[in-house]
Length: 537
Image (spheres, rainbow, N blue to C red):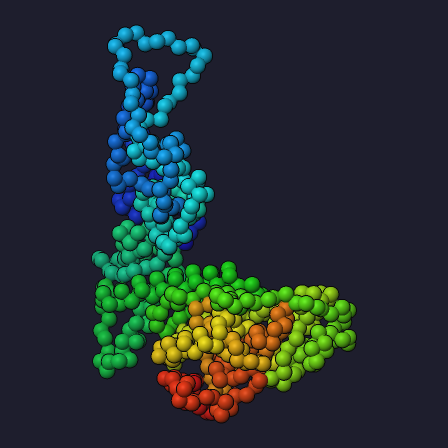
């Protein structure tokens, strides 16, 4: 988004980034005057020479405290006191210094001996801070401030930091992050611009002719139109639109929507950095202003709770050259091979899947390695319009009876699952999945730790089916949960599975326990299916 009208923006001496638009006039301080800095450097040199001469005569007093506030490094937001390398290990009795000799000519010293600066009492009274690099190696605190906030602080203090992308080259670059407001003055359109990496206090009104960002302009008008349509749905009278300026409520909505769009994009990038499968993850919300979940952590495999051990190492493996025709891992376990040559599942629900593991001699192209390769389809986490919160839809066509995703989370005991279930039911959420293939000893809780399956909604007429899978961990109490498609799923269709679906394939309402001992708050089902049971639990 290059800028137009550079001669009208800041004169000469400013540099535009590849995506920069323009530089706000008169908002940011220019380079410091060179004459003043030179005089300051010369006076500092004279002070240093005087201090070195004074060190040879008497111990130096503690230096005065630096003026506050002063620019602090942005690499550390919290540090613990560090012991000064010159200070003694522990304070001892006060040292008694000898009397000062009478004034006279200074004693002569050999010319070959260099002058050394002695540590003064300041090391004992106030520890000197270690260099930032050495302090980082000793002890660090994770930064909880967003990248934009660090960039804004860095540019405000005229500091450069390669770790957050602020260098001398782009320190004074200006790029439009989003548009905040609109007005018309003397038949000329102006937009209030939020500059990327700069605080909100530096927002400026810019004429339309200087803005070369068609996508941001289109988003601005789309957000404005969506707000007006939402307001008019609840009112019979049509709102009169003011063409000379925006109402404060509309401008506030546009800013919140722009910030939400940025937050969702960052969350999408974070999910794709953490995933270990081929399929991409996208995020969108065209329904409301809800942002990313605050207490959710993406994982790719089971996370055992304290006290639970997961042994992910197989004890034996096959030596097949062609697992379709030889005695492979499923045959050793007494079951059939789960897949056909088209990588579609061919066994009925309730039958376990035994895939080749890390000890097998077959390669990664083995037809019996499907679930362990992860999701192969690009999926989208989106905000539903029927009040079900977040959901998951596929962006590509999915063939029937193919693997879609794995359900992962925190592995907890059934007793802990009962306690958490009471809390989740009171909140109207359901994330517990019992590992009841052989016994009901463990449960998977995907409320806080999970993957894309955390956002898959319930349906009484689902398009995904649950299967128990064993790969490296052959403990029948801890099967992996895989979701396979039950039919062909069109691109853009939401993915759902039945929350009451068991690993054995039993989805009848008789399998739900409503005994008084386990009586809970019932959650209303909103799937809208013809065969809807009315409740999730």
